[in-house]
Length: 586
Image 1 (cartoon, rainbow, N blue to C red):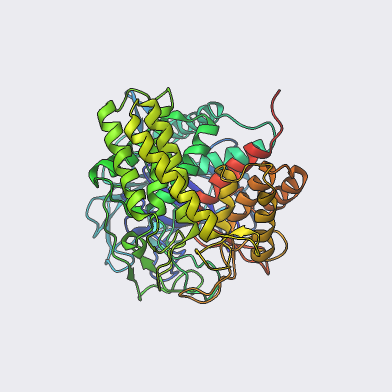
Image 2: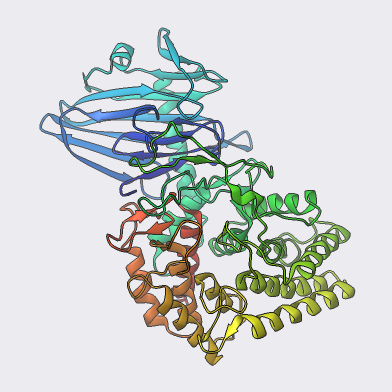
């Protein structure tokens, strides 16, 4: 479903492209309305396409070690390439990352003919957009700020959407807000050179495992694009409303920051060696912890706002006609108590990682951790919606208790580092309580696993993280039983895992959730079943979308990618599993 879809961006915005078409672009922020959204509606989603009139073959790839996309159109009349990118490079000791999309067309052979269409829209396709033409650009009216296409393609051909002979390099620069006032060709070429250089330098500064380097680099580049650099927040995905599986109604807006992702994302950034990205995300998390006085919700907007009313946009047909299209997410209103342990695991790096130690005053650090431990203590046996956000009812979810245990254990470590003995004693007491609940209410001897809900027999793929987090030691005989029980119950084909098997608010889960299978890979490595893990991991690598990118889900019948795209959690899972599985450099 997302095969051949590529992402570009500059940590201020991202865009998705396929075969010369801008399928998704939101401005000015990733959670704003789309300016181009044919991904969700071909009629009302606008269009910005470059077409090869006689092309019989279209090939898409990334310029090596960059987030610059190259599309080659080939046909009987000749061939040409299109280079698409969002400018990003260092300028005046800061990063230059404007709301600007640059498209460069270059003839390669023969006499190729091309066509350009540019029809931006806004308010999710409801805003009427006008346009007027100046000497070298087209201005689009109806936006809250100037939107301008500056180009040396004859503007008449763009306005009339007529084919033209591509006899030399042509440049198109679309801007939101500040227009391009400098020379078009020189600026576009210079920005391309500097953007390619930026990404290649960033990749050179990336730590990679000995094995699976190309896959890790592409995942790292995708992860980087999902950090909204202004605040440090990390989006769960670029898109909204791509269905988890066809006809399911499981179409959600993922352009928010989920706290449940934080710990694992920080692990990935740490493994990659990108401390600046870690620091920005930690600052975002710290702001949330302090601003909300310890009381947290599952997800937040990228500016830290706690509200995002979920609405259905009935006027949009949806991805491949498969609606509904939703903006906002009800998850921001849920009670998911696992967030407190996850927040402890996340912000603890500020106090335990020597690169960040000292940035937060000791009394503030103690107050932050104490507030989170108090919340874990108070909510330890409180029913909630669980990390998969069940909407119909609340229960005592095993994963929430597991994160209470992990958060309290880490809080005790932080307390010792901060020389706060009373906090350490309190945290250890909460850790012991959480372990008792897991042992007496969540471990099911007959099933052979920690279960999804206390006192119930069903399993949950998220409970594989009991192995990752050290709840089971690798030589604990229960670890093998636990992993095998989850794999047996949730596998759709002997390997790919669903999140759970019970009926929820929308029926039964059909698709495999990509990150769950990466979690299984890691768990197998930890308990010493490396060959089994490698076979599974390499199968997963063969299921990418053709450009090294992953959606949220995999459809079991066709093994196609499905769901929101690219999914940060999927790429974090790939990175962590690759490092866990790879041979050591020494």
